[in-house]
Every structure is written in structure tokens, then in C-alpha cells.
Length: 254
Image 1 (cartoon, one colour):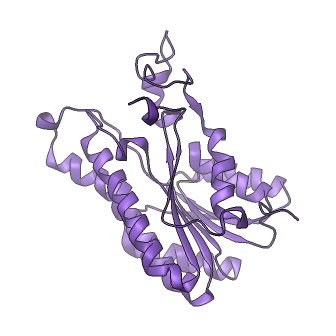
Image 2 (cartoon, rainbow, N blue to C red; image 1 turned 180 degrees about the vertical axis):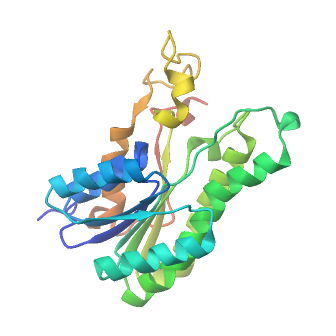
């Protein structure tokens, strides 16, 4: 057994039907965890579940719209019932489906992006927090973005939401630390997923977008697997309230 071993741990992962969420859910299973996976895309969830089961771990599929608080509460309760308890909670659901200058942004768009990226994290943390605290242990991983740590032209609501996620992460780390619950943020840089395909699936491979990335390329979703397992496991047992940045050096070059 190593510090990265998750054998016997139980995890709940949102946004697990594709991209970074699927990678994290499968990585937790590879490390030994059983996983309850939640997202709106049932077909994608089924594919993620098949990968997890193929690794010899249990997978429970929970179709979920994370912007609906009552549905989140029910999904977390069901995950606890099916798994027995939770050790790991990953708030990954999020994204932005538009890029627009601030003055052209509709307030309805602002509200939609904040519900998906910020409110959803609040809902899950409230739904799972008391369970984790009562057990006296647990790791919460809130997936943020470099957009929450630097200017995000055209992505104002997304950047604001992800900045708020980092703030919430720090606050909950302080409030829950005495209960043995750790709360950290995983902060990816430009990662090539289906959600942002329009930016990287171009003749030049989206070179303009990653011009400021010292490693000179887009991240692969799979490159978030190791950092997520680190945060979930005892390898990070004295780490809480922190933001783990996986951005190819982008912020260092700002």
C-alpha cells in the first residue's frame, strides 16, 4: 500500500460523463476507490461506469442536473446509501458555452454560468459536508480554472465563478479543518476537451490560445488524473485550503 492508494475509499464525482470529470472518476477507481458518478449525460455516464467496472471497482450512475439544489441533495444522499459513506467529493461539473465581451454579455448568461460553476459547488458541499464532518475525515476537491486566477477576457462569468470556487475552498478548509476534512482546489489550465473543441480543433491546433503556455501545448484531460488522486489520497494528508495549478506554466509566464 502506498500513500496514493484509495482502496476502500468511496467517491462522488460530478460532471463525470466526459472530459476531466471522467478522467478523475476512472483515476480514483484505478487507485482503488468505488465511485458514484453524476452528470446530465446518461450515455457518457454509462461509458464512464463501464471503465470503472472494468477495473474491478463499483460504479453507481446518478443522472443529475447540478444546478437544481433538491436534485443535488437527493443524489448525494443516494450516493451515501449506495456506497455506505463518502470519503472523497469531487466538484467537477462546470464550463462555459459562450465567449463574449463583458459589455455584450447578457445577465441571463451571467446567471446561467454562475449556477453551473459556482452554485453547483455550493449545493454539493452543503449536501455532503455534514456527512464528512461527522465521519471526521474526507477530501473535497473543487475543480477551478486558471480563469479564476487571472484575467479571463470573454469569459467574465466563468472566471468570476472559478475565482469564487477558490475562495470557498479556502473558507471551507478553515471551517472544516478541525473535523478532519480537507478541502482543496484543482486548477487546470487550457485542457483539450469536447467542451472547448472549438478552440483547439483548428488547422493550427489552437496555437493562439496557448501562446503564453511555456510547455507550448494544450493539456490532455488525462494529465489531471495524477493531481486528483494526490489530492484525494493520504499523499496530501497535511494539505488543505490550497490551489493545485496544472497549467503548463501559464500563470508563471503571465
